[in-house]
Length: 118
Image (cartoon, rainbow, N blue to C red; front, side, top):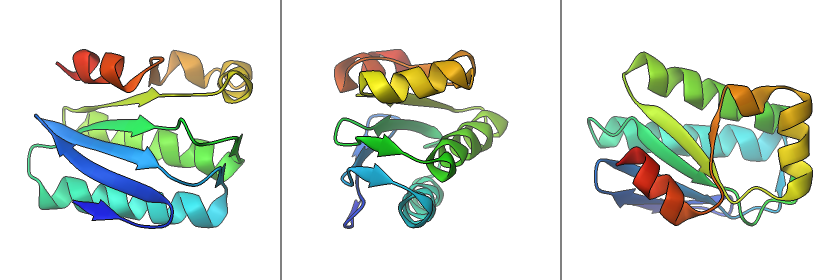
């Protein structure tokens, strides 16, 4: 579907997978990744079901957190959902501290995420 220095977006049955390529997700990376995911959702109607694989990410800035929340909200408004997978223990801790672990759907592996989207 699309690939950039920051993300590789691939179609799956009923949705898309965004594999984040960048170790650091700060302001610039967040903006590009969000634009690419939104473009992929628009290009593929009824694909408001998104998996974000963050296995390569070692640092997630506040803008990255905002991107996850924004995508979650957009998908939910369209009757879809976002599932996040591959989080490091450190990033998972940040999500717990900010209570985003209660808002976002988080699983360990991409395979689990695919099953979750069903």
